[in-house]
Image (cartoon, rainbow, N blue to C red; front, side, top):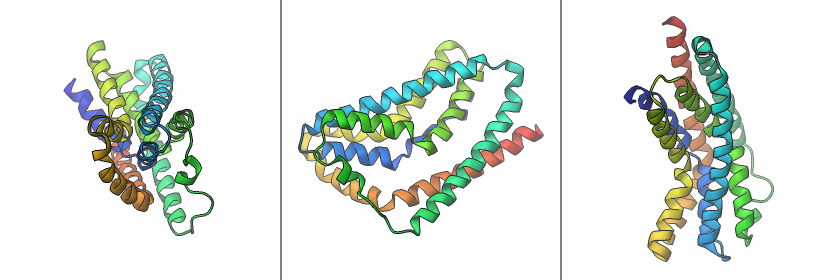
Length: 220
């Protein structure tokens, strides 16, 4: 169990850093139309998309023969490293270009809880950086020799971490009400300003992580 958690926790922590998902959650809680309902709608949509990816990953992982895991580990590590490096470079290029079109806040302004549910689904489905970290973590669970209960706990922790960008702000507003909103407004301003920078750091950091892991797997 401890070995499995050691394998998935770094990936879960990286996948939890999702500025776009956090921004949508905070925007929903600032909505003039049923803010708390909209916040939980984002959470429900995100969770539905995550369950879809989890089922898909578990089905594929369970179909792979146990002896093939080592070669697959190497392939996953190097592929993830290259993909994350590419995403990081793309984000740096985007950083040097002026923003065009409507902002996310403009597109979601005064929308219904149903629209926020859809936004939660779409953002989680298209959250490439988090997914590049999520699927290797899921692979670690499917190949693990730990018992069913331990694997279930590991999966629960993984899903919980990916939902943190939504659960934390929605949970604070649910518990504290309007008292939580000034803090969330400051957080929204900071995250909106530094979204690209945060994403780039995560992508390059884990690109190096997977590169090292790939060479370790290759030479072991």
